Image (spheres, helix red, strand yellow):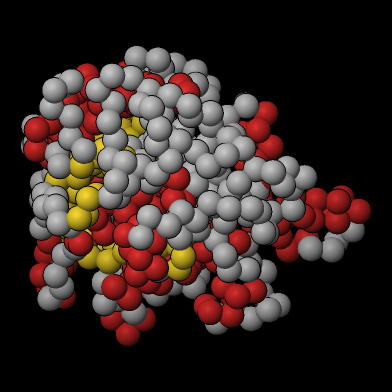
Length: 398
């Protein structure tokens, strides 16, 4: 990318805990957040999920939001992560910095619509939540509780939504539209999610096992993560130090099938290839790949085929899926896993691919035991969505 684009702040909330520190502790102790349902009112109680431990009321109290204020779980989680990201970047209301806000989601405020649908039909009870159903409303709701937001955009490309929000942030800076962009995604668990994926027969009743021959599906999760994406001029003007550089982005849409991945991994291959080209890097420059790695039979086989094709059978970089830690957070996964990549770069470790048994193919050897004391110069983060909307991001040492 030209000119350089930097990450100056990041925030996260997931099944691993609230904030970057809690996330780092969980990753470095190999502690998964997958467990029984606590909040989602589903009849499928046997399915393990990665839920955020906090209730809506606990998050609202932490954010200073009054009990009578209509809010959604996605917006609450999003604000928790967004405020941490801004604080880390040294941005508050007093700074008076114009901020573009780009947020990815699929369900928006759907969990309130599911809870109050019959009320919507029969009376005016809870009618204030009708207007909070869509993802644009989630973005606006969050923007109204953040300092300095002068531009908003909502991105919905299924599981690549948050990654594409980061791509949009980079393009805004490149075009001179913004100097500081808060970008990422938020997604709460809903019955729509659970029942839809259950119907597709891709939910595992056991902890997920990405890239294993025994893989039988994914575990759903929820959470949010946002990154402060900033131009070099703005960062220098504010006297901030970067976390890393967003050096390359790639997006492809192979449109192979509405939900299934192309068996050849053509979309993932093109996305990763484009991200490398934009970063001006060779495949051998990548020190780690945070794979999309959902644990579904088709996705993992196609993604590994694409990685092997691009990097070469004998030159694969270390890779792992961190979804066994968080669950598949769908539209938020791209930014949640970007934060995980940045934590790995900052602290010099490779996250483990938990629950691994026999690899799905010869040569497929993800990081099964966490590695400490490693130097990561360039890392790649993959996020692939339904419809073949595939995105790869490259982060580099600043």
